[in-house]
Length: 330
Image 1 (cartoon, helix red, strand yellow):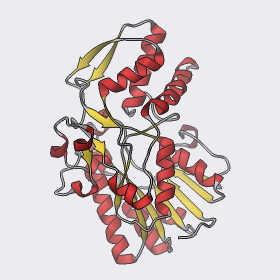
Image 2: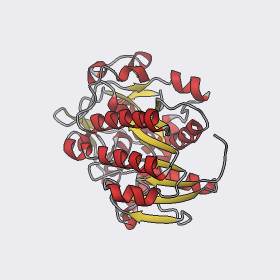
Image 3: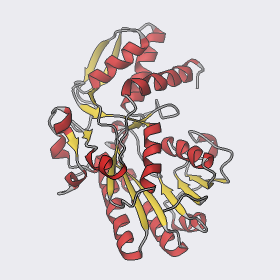
């Protein structure tokens, strides 16, 4: 693939990652059609330099066909998702997102769209290989670990099914595809309250609220020993861009391999805030698998690159943004 100015459809453009993606594509000079099920005034970010903005349901086949007409490439980041509290309580709603990628693939085939990127997730990995806390290297999930399959209920099955059908369309209809398995993307402009937020934003919010209200304690879901890696959004956008410059069409991890426990995450945010809080552990709350990290061996082989922004650096920017949102009452 050579660099050229393209007509690009971004599904889920009103979401967190896609908001950054649209801005990046516009800066590169591409013509971008941005679509999301949310009304435009609820989008996380809006780039007015994108050609068109549509609030429509991409789970409906006719919308995928209409918006993909004339597109050279599709980024499908549209789905129902959120943090662990959301996905463990909305299995059916998460599964409905298979309609989005299925209809988008059909539209790409029938409209002559040659390239499509699908946003998958680390939630596709089998739960049984993540039920123990191990060291960083042993906790890393390799792409081949996806099978035999036993992903996260609902959301994980939806992502894995959509990976499979994407590959079938590649094989049967010669589509040029990319499949990114995101590992916990965070940063400014992300969800930080309301139930869909992920751990970095949730912890930032809790620490900020405790500091502003003079509280001495915060609540932590689980025992705090569960481990994760978190990728700053700038690395995510860079990774997607580099992946298109490769010829790699199989699923690939896109995540940081800097693994921390939730307790260590809280330590970092407390240090940024300049306070120390008592922790109340809520063992009955959703907490997901015990241990998860990204194995970046393959992405380094394919791209000669891997996400590298340090968690502490990304948290500082995220904390500052959420602090300002709370202080400004937004």
